Image 1 (cartoon, one colour):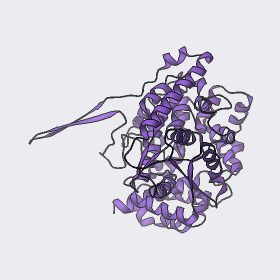
Image 2: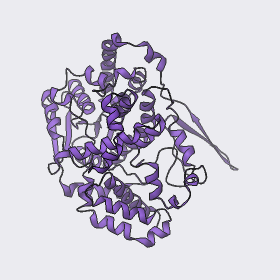
Image 3: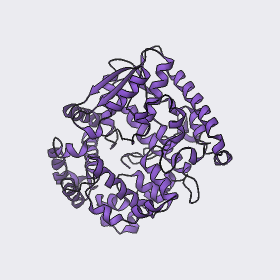
Image 4: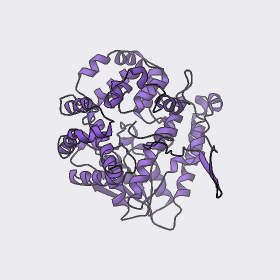
Length: 459
């Protein structure tokens, strides 16, 4: 998954507290008693959603706008300077624009990658800042800056966490903290309203046209073509290949495939346990993999709506990945980050809305975008979503090449750990330096993260 979803942790017999749960601890001289209870669950109100029709769309936008504005207004209250992240995407642009309307002296902050055009969004952020009249800080990040940030992140992690965009959050927070002590972010918009490519893909699988059938049935073809995250065309091929992987799966297995950085067979091959029979590898014996998987996918049913997928994202990806990286990356620099789109009123309202208000064959986050279209520049309304990524492939072919080669060549450590299959590591290396790297750079980073954590905490 690139992270460890609650309640599991990397350490045996240690657990995280899941969202919406609390612990009650009582003790006396003889014993300590710990009791875990759930006090809140995001309500998935499908009955309410079914009552809404296209005639209710305009009114629903007005309600959403009111909730968002009130949430931003509340989160601007502070006795210290407050600023706002501005990535150039829809969510942060909405938050920054409303913040400016509510607080005249608000400042916005964007990091850019002048050496990596594919990852750079400063031009879009600049357009938003100009339209909103924001005081805008652009922070150009060079290769050297990214590399130093990566080292800092690796040394701060108390658990393996493979989302490389934490490197960017760390860099952004470092610069923002020199100006303000609190920053607003747009986190949550994608999970609530369907903003990720996997959400659009899920919609297309459920309501396929000719194009979806064609892409889904051409899996072997997409696998042959060069694909990676580092270029527009190669990333498109990578996405088509992933779509094809999930096209014929059921909703639970499809979500599991698209939410991970590798499929189950690839993950099992990476692990030393791959030498066991498949049935034993995927059984409940030992690590309880199947049991944990079923728990994480508990909201997705065979005949449910796509809102079940979004709820699963909110419970799993948002809590364990997106919010974790922002919290960890910002608190390294003592910067507090607030998330207006995750106000409980907005969250509850989002899950009362039908899927058709959020997604169709051409649009993602439809109601959120339409509700604020009058405030956003036309240039960004239909921009394809970019992840907050770092140029991993370029790193592993440059600065990190020797680090990775040393990490997979340390056979004494690998044998001592008893975790990884050396043949799989050799295969990742071969793929990483081939003409068709796919997601191998992501796998290589996850491996480096694990080994860095292991050396920092387990030796």
